Structure formats: C-alpha cells, structure tokens
Length: 258
Image (cartoon, rainbow, N blue to C red; front, top):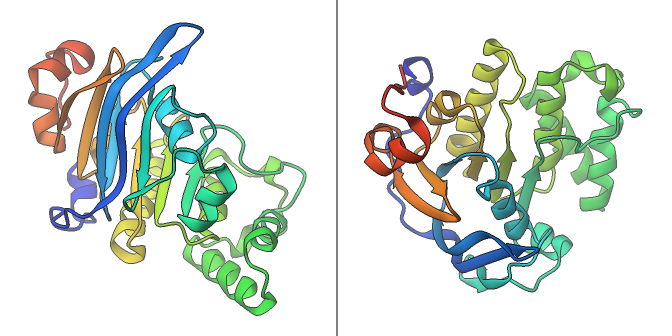
C-alpha cells in the first residue's frame, strides 16, 4: 500500500452524492441476490466493493448501468430517479462509464480503430472527436500500439484500451469490474496509478470490484464488504480490515494490507 499512497489524494471530503441505490433487492429464479441494499457513492470518491463469489457485486454494476432492472428499489444518479432509464440514456445523459471484466473491445480491430469506433458513436463533431482521442492516446501512452490489433495486445494493454474507450464519453462515474484480474504486479501498479489519476485529475467518481483485495484497498478511499445480499461493513482501507463482520465474512483473521 505504501507505493500507492504517495499517488493518492488527501482524504475524500466532498459529501455530495453522485449515485445512490435505495432499498434495492434483486432475485434470480426466486434466489435473492441483493436484499434491501442501500448504498451512497460520493462525487469524486474511489469506492471498492469486496465480497465472496456470487454475493452480488457484478449485479450491482448491472443495475447501475441499466443492464438489469432491480426487482425492487431505486437507482438515483445526481438525485434523479434513473431506475427505468435505458442503458444508452444513462451513458449519455448521466455519463455512466463501464469497463467489464471480459471483452469491451473488438479483437480484429486495431487499437486506434477501437478508439475511433467508440468516438464515432459518442462524438459527432470530427474535430472534437479527434481531439478527445488524441488526448487519450497521449494520456495512456498508446502511440507505439495504434496499429496493433486488439487480439495481439497484452492483458494490461487491453485493459488500458477498454478504460480509454470508456473515457471517450467523458464519464462522471466509471465502473471497473475486476480490473486487476490475471495481471502481473507491474501492470496492476500502473492501473492503480491510472485509477487514482482519474479521480485527482479528471474528477471522476470510480467504483471498483475485484477479488484482489490488497490491490483494491491500495487505491480506494472507501471499501464495502457484501455478504448475503447486504453491505455488512464500510470504511477506509484500514478500518475495513479491522471490522469484525468483514473479517468473519471475507478477510479472515490473518489478512493484512502490507
């Protein structure tokens, strides 16, 4: 954690709400995944979601983006009820960006072609689109990779590309599903720096779920632990690993950040 701490901004102070899940429940074939869940995510916060497999982390992302409708409850973005809004309207009107664990790009297109494809969907003005894509190329140091097909990129390069594609629409809230999965240590550190820079330089609210607990806790302001469809613990990285409920349901007694 010490390596990332020097990149982190000071403790989050703005308590304005960016996104709220209000009394959300979700059922799959009579099996309850989320149970009357309440969650507030603040503007410019980096929030981490932790919990065992099947606890509902990805389901929360799907409900936020509009991929799935909750069985009960509401999704509020900047105070507006978006529960019934379609995916496209949430992405455009409320600037929700989503980076899935798998996919998110077209393998047979080059890196630049993938960026251009998303750019043409979201930005109609040619000059604005070119400027935005040029900014992302510079920001992510994509210049040597522009002509390489996505299927030939490394795992870390693909993840950077999908994040870059998600930023073309200037999201105010960015959801990252398992961004550290199957990556080497140096690539994870690179992504952690990118995530913190999205918060500190781009003023983006970032929500991450990942099974790599130490890597997640190294770059978030606050984390929650989910169990049995509910949030059982919430706090800073240091607070969350000391929480007795979080220890019992997820971390165990021996877990340490350092």
